[in-house]
Image (cartoon, rainbow, N blue to C red; front, top):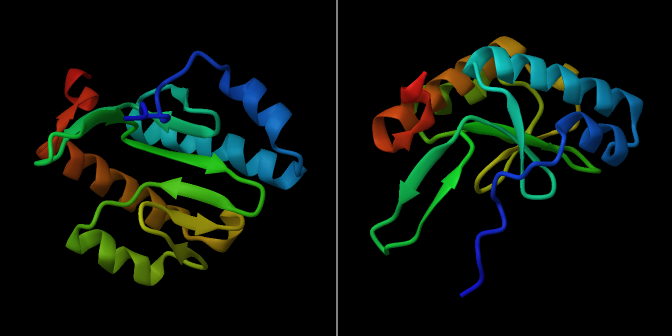
Amino acid sequence: MAGIKTKETEIDVANFINSYVENDKKREDSFQLIKLMSDWTTFEPKMWGPTIIGFGSYHYKYASGHEGTMPLIGFSPRKAEFSLYVYSPTPENKHLLDDFGKFKMGKACIYVKKLSDINITVLEKMCRTTIEYLKQHHECACREK
């Protein structure tokens, strides 16, 4: 069985953004997301795998026995769009999507082209709701704060 690729690394987040993100606006949006998510979680950004910037962590274990550790929330500044890892399937988050702005929904993330396409206040509420959900349902580093 292959190992989990999405693990916390020692790669410097600012260096990653400055070397990986070619578009100036996307680079600016990336640093803005870091500031916002750091404020909302009180965690410093860490690289998870080669391209995900995560904040905090939680441990999950499925009934199948599969388990691992993932960031509480995070994002990846992919070439075409941002992948936001901020969504848990709560009734409140489903409702928040109505006012979120321009996005596409994936299985585990929300895709947005740029921050100006979305409502940052709604993003904050979604992040906080997700963190609370993870706190209640998983072993969570946020309990240590």
